[in-house]
Length: 315
Image (cartoon, rainbow, N blue to C red):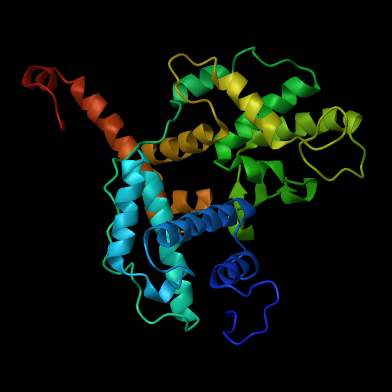
């Protein structure tokens, strides 16, 4: 249900404010996403005010040429094409909202094309390298050692986001059915299965956890002071662990999510199934991992003696 045009808005009296209100309370976007939308649209508004006679920024007076000029303006200031396209996406959503509310008739973004971007493949860890790390003696047998290893195992074996792992509660883990309930973007919940080995690790961790946190603490992952782990703690655990893998350029929790997806597809999982496990809203977000698996296939092909004789393949 949209915000009515004639609604009495004390705090949303400008179109951009009404749009942000819509994203926050009706689309349930995260605070980080809302901040990005707000910043992108405000930057475009400032550009229009500085470079046209549209002093009060009337969106209905914006045309395609002005948007194209803004694109050139951003690129001239060395902004990456992917960042420019993100800003255009924010602007497109804003104009679509205004048309839906009857504030505009024509969408000036209709004939605008963003700059081409080169596809950057996500970083991932190969299964053998990840196996060596997780099976090593790098983790202790105390509470923090067992917890830290479990955090890595859970991120890698389920593909969940850091924010999703951060908010897991004891009640979200079903040990009988071996399912974890996670809350993803826009508060969408999904159930993720896990294997018996991960179950054993969780049971070992929970045995040690009883000595640290009382029954009143509902968070699954906690610190020694009984407080839940923070996003920074999870990041530091993953970074310190992945830094032990030689030649790995990036060591963030999201690398483990990429590694999960790549490993699933390399071992025959269907793309749509991986999409559901990752909690992606569209198949396009998941399809990037097919490019990674194709790159792996090309490397395998290069090992063939005829491939070496014939030169590079697929360049």
